[in-house]
Amino acid sequence: FTGESGVGKELFARMLHEISQRSRGPFVSINCAAIPDTLVEAELFGVERGAYTGASASRPGRFERSSGGTRFPDQVASLRLVAQSKLPRARQEGEIERVGGIRPIRLDLRVVAACNVDLREEVRQGRFREDLFYRLNVYPIHLPPLRSRSEDIPVLMTHFLRLYRERYGREIHGFTPRAMRAMLTYTFPGNIRELQNMIERAVIAANDESHIDTVHLFRDELFSSKPSFLMDEGGR
Image (cartoon, rainbow, N blue to C red):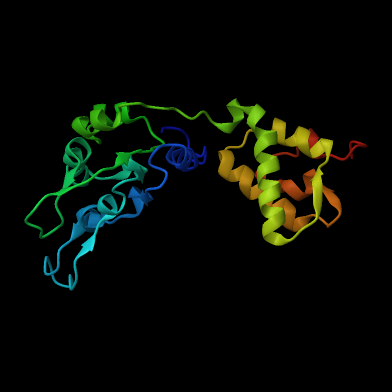
């Protein structure tokens, strides 16, 4: 999956897992940008006891724990070239070795990766391994930004309203027409993640037995000038 930050790549990956024949297996996600270079191999492939100082027990890595299910490396382009070199064999052969191990471990898993940059351009710039790119680029799906699919906004608003009403025990009846128009007009630079945060904020801010309005959704600091949809009905 490719697309801007916040478009819902992990949500789509989870949905793909849940509707597949692998749904009974694990869905294992990892943020590749958060793994230190020195720990990539151990984190992904696991460690055998005594492999290095401090390795007091054997433990499986993320690939091994996702066997029978789906492995989701997010922000895969953030891995450095040395770390990338560890992945093609696991992807192509379904086989890994733990750090300090002496035997290969066969796996049964599907890899669904995600990134928010153009991997072809990263390959051209020498920042991403070509062999890994072609092993991942089997069935690419681009998720457009929320501003390009405004028909999804009301559906997402309703979903997140239901979610946060239950979480916070609130009795919110819905959205005012003005709030709905405002959300359909807004460009959402943070995509679905931003919309989700706005609905949570609104559920917290609105009174029970009321409707969510623009004052509950938007803050002035989000805009260089106050847009018309944030003005009251009298234009003040």
